[in-house]
Image (cartoon, rainbow, N blue to C red; front, side):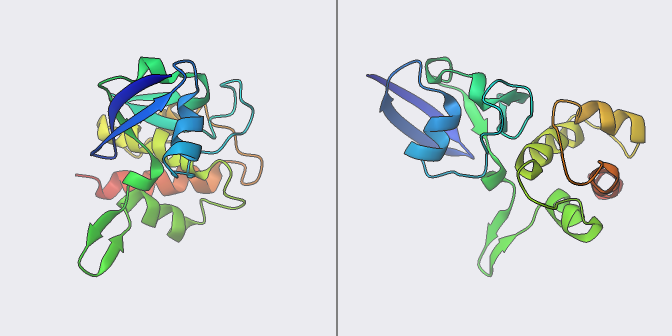
Length: 158
């Protein structure tokens, strides 16, 4: 067992787990953050996408021993908390309005890849958006509504 300390969605955490345990399993099973999904377990589908130190990663491929002292952002960290409850991130709101989510398996990963794209200054360009989400597979929507949602959020992103 290895004690690993890192930040998740701005909060410090410490887990005492085997060093080769996957970040995905730590997030879901040890920290109760079930937004990241296990799709393929091989880094091919993007359902488990999180942002690690500002980079999009497949959490199913990251051993927890590589997360010591780092910053992890999950889909649960997108909404802001206010006195009136959670307020959706503009990207989450755009997915809701544009119908960018259907079954929900890919949605957290799509949101995280899109959030990183927007945070890096990405705009509403269709080709650039498709490139940014290329590591995330969706079996329901055909991507059109997802791309529309990201473009909508890009239009209002500061």
